[in-house]
Image (cartoon, rainbow, N blue to C red; front, side, top):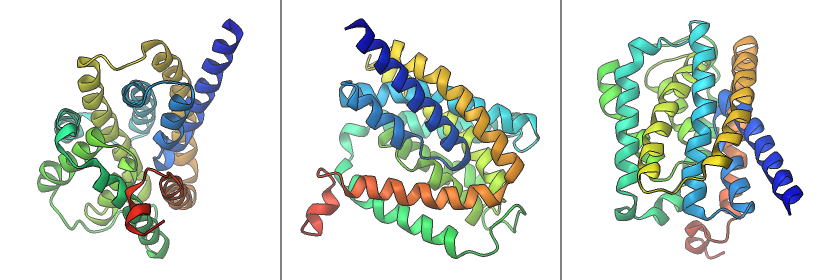
Amino acid sequence: MLASIDSMLLLLAFAGFIAGFIDAIAGGGGMITVPALMLAGIPPVEALGTNKLQSLFGSSSATLAYARNGHVNIREQLPTALMSGFGAVLGALLATYIPGDILYGLLPVLLIAIAIYFAIKPNIGDVSRAQRIKPFLFGITIVPLIGFYDGLFGPGTGSFFMLCFVSLAGFSLLKATAHTKLLNFASNFGSFLAFAAVGVINWKVGLIMGAAQMFGATAGAHLAMRVGAKLIKPLLIITCIILTIRLLIDPANPLRQWMGF
């Protein structure tokens, strides 16, 4: 029995490492860790809360790696990060009042749209472009909205941040990735506080997975900084497609019922 528990923890730690590596580059780490936690027998709500705990390690490690190399200024972006965290707290606290089935059903459509956008835009790369929205307006509208979604539901949050940073803020892919990890850390932290307040976190599993994710995220961030858009763009597209497939094959996804499957 003890050996079985140890093996399960080892597998969860490996899932955390892989999730941290992928998430630091293109987002979507939750599509690995949440199913892994549930397969380990952890109840759904507790799996979500534990996932937020272990995600803190990965998002913070990736953020620090990007910050040390000058791709994001944490002090300058602190107000924006606070807005992301504030939105996540509201999302987590108000989750019971929001029709989550609609979000779950629409998410595959949104992710495919993001994948298509990055696939057909030839000028998305390592060079920043013109802004379409002022930083202040971006920080008080787009950021808390995505943070709210992360607290409410979660999957695809990194992809949504990336899309908005590139299409609205005019960021290069690498700069968008760096800023996404900072805001994702803030939304993870806000959600974590809400889940911790209601006591739905498995601390032992979360800390073990978090330690592994920290190493994976650091490795992923350094690889992204070395390769740049040549790595980030295709991995982002692939991540969106895989997450979409995973959502569509879930019998509980309302979109299957809406389409008559």
